Length: 391
Image 1 (cartoon, rainbow, N blue to C red):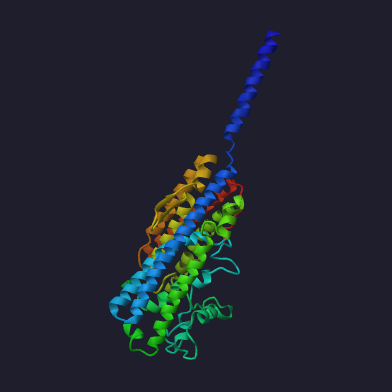
Image 2: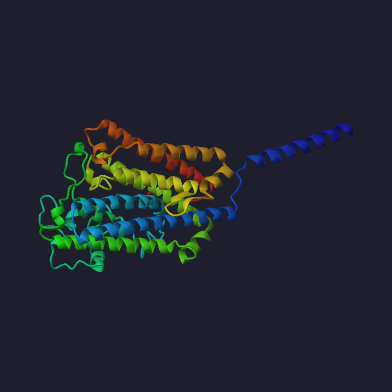
């Protein structure tokens, strides 16, 4: 009897060890409350980020309006500087795309009015070899906000871009015709806005574009305002909304940034395939897109007015369930943003077929972005979420 009792007790202890040992190896599930905290933090970040983009777009409009009242070189340079500054917060917002949210919504989305690219510059104004091209030189075309909206991507042709950041960029800088080795952006002459034919229409077109940009950014920002219908639905969306967040940063990193914006340009060695080709600011576009991805994963944002916003994050959820995977994800993000920041300006020189060192830097960034997207898919699997990373 004593031997049997010892055997029974030993077996009981062993079974307890087995149960608790196995359970300690199982990932801890994120609670609905923890998921919602991440969603609330994300939605607040999105709203503040769009508010910052709107603030800088207002500064751009003010500078352009000042330039239009009395065009001179100093005011033209001021408008260019304002455009460059305005692009920085917007570049971060692209991490909030690709899942049918307010920016991309089939019926109401404004992305095509805000950031359409690539573009046929000749749809707007003269270009090399086509001196009479563009809506500006069509004197029977009335330059108004609604008419420009109606013209955007006319006939379903995506490169028929009439509005947005890059239309403004083209009007401020003009085509970049210089050899990439000279490291100069477009050199549109001031006379295009003073004494050249259609100068008044060019100024009207430029100011109207800035008005439209303000309107469209305000619309998107309003959808994310705390208490709005979309905000309320999103923060109550549980894992469905969590899947959207991961889809957004996964699609940006792999299909869009690594693919459309970098790999295509590198393969073609063509500056026409770079994002901000008129101003030579593509390197900043890449850096900001990459930083936006990091912001989302870490649940952090540096607001212009409110300072650092930090709270519940995807990183927190993953840390609770699998600390090793969280460390792997953070390391992959560090590697990709470092590689993106290593790309030198101007981007058109980096992708030149005569610049192997620059090509290698761009390829390293592409590889790092694709690698961290692979880890992001592991994160999605851990959280039992289905995501899309192909745009």
